[in-house]
Image (cartoon, rainbow over the protein chains, first blue to last red):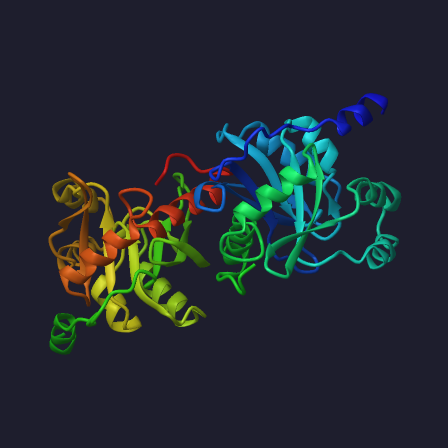
Length: 206
Length: 206
């Protein structure tokens, strides 16, 4: 993986970040024990302003297909002006972990993982022991790097991990798109859509 | 139906219309021959500004359950501050016509039907002849009244039918919520969501 490793160190340069930079933000829907698949919704936004479109796919609960499904979805995506992928947490459908460096390398789009709370890695590591492919999943989580805080409201933080983008650029994009809540708008809205579609109505504000 | 008729003439009075008046806008998803059901998505918006939540249900293709499904959905809706229901066209899932006066009477919420183009009633009447309950459907369409133009951009119009609201109030709400296109934002966004969920990605801008 020498080639991969050196590519991973490279970043997409943002010489200037426009207020209307096109972002797709993904979140998964709720699921219950026994479900084999979960919906993943992507909202395409102009910065934190307004929605240009909606993408969707499914991933398997506790599976290993999150990355390949997102790569495939982005490959056939008609929104060619998307510049950044955001994901709400590094895992969909339980512990179906997104390989953020792989996603960046295969889509050529920088990836920003956003979480509202600092992940508890000790709890995650314990939970992974009950699943197959424990090491594969844990490596994907470790390789995503330490989450770093971004202050999206005075004194309030979200946490991000990145692939293919400098922290300062990622921080600027998260801040400019968090127009309505602590979370970037493409992620807040994808959360509401996924909940509303699966449950009949959304709860909370992402 | 004397009681119904007199109630129909009453309107919800809007003493002042706030920019952030809560609107739910419904649109149905695409379907293909052989589908028995189609998804209907409702986006709850603050005026034409931002999304508060998402609702969804299904209605039968060419069925008669659109009104009862919307009444039921609104009855269990947790967004208690919604003041207006918008629907993108008077029919979902083909010719499953919404009884807009019934929807108003049962939800106590005014209803505004919005269409981008003036409906061709001659074509609709012909098509209805191939379906059961022709007269029921045609009566629901006729009772919704003549669509009236609303200029949402200079020289560009959408057409509306209303129940439970004065035309001037409905016109003001349509205009204030059409922030991003000719169509009110709750309807534009529900269209994108329904397409994106059913097809994997949305096309066009509503």
